[in-house]
Length: 169
Image 1 (cartoon, rainbow, N blue to C red):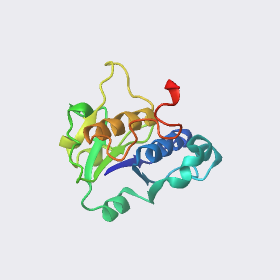
Image 2: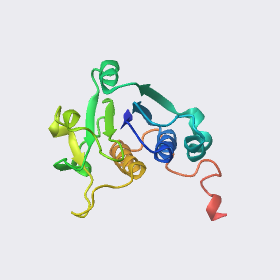
Image 3: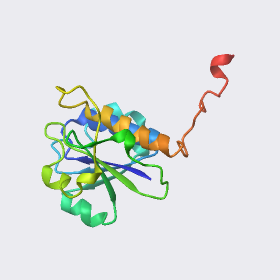
Image 4: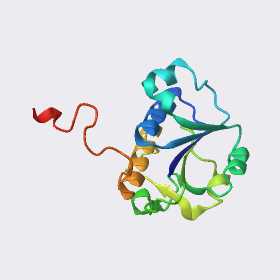
C-alpha cells in the first residue's frame, strides 16, 4: 500500500489537489499538523471536488503522534537533499506499506526527521538552481512511479466510465 504523508502542509489548494490524487490513485493520506487552514475549508473541497468523500485520511497533531500510531512504517522522504533519485528506489513490494513523506511548501521536511534515515531520502532531479517543484505535482509524480512499479494494481488502465471504445465510435 502506498501512503502519502504531508508534514505540516501550508497551502489548502495543494492539499486539495493531493486529496484528489489520493482518491483517484487509491492512496491513503496522512497529514501531520499543526496546519494553518481547515481541511474542510472551501478551497480544499473545491479543488478536491466530490472525491473528498471517498478519501482515506488520517490527521496527527504532531510528528511524534504519527510515529506512535505507525511504528513499523517503511518511511521514504522526498527532499532536495536526497542522494538517490526517486526512480531508482524500489517500490515494487506490494506487501510493504510505504509511507512517502513530503515537507511543507516553505521549508520541506525538518533535518531532524531526515537524519533518522538518510538512506531513505530521495530526490526529484531538477536543474541545479531550482529549489523545488509544486508540492501537489511532486506527490503525483512520486505516487505514480510507485504505482507503476506495482503494476497499477487495482487501477483502471482503460476507460471504464464511458466505456473502453468511447473514443473509437
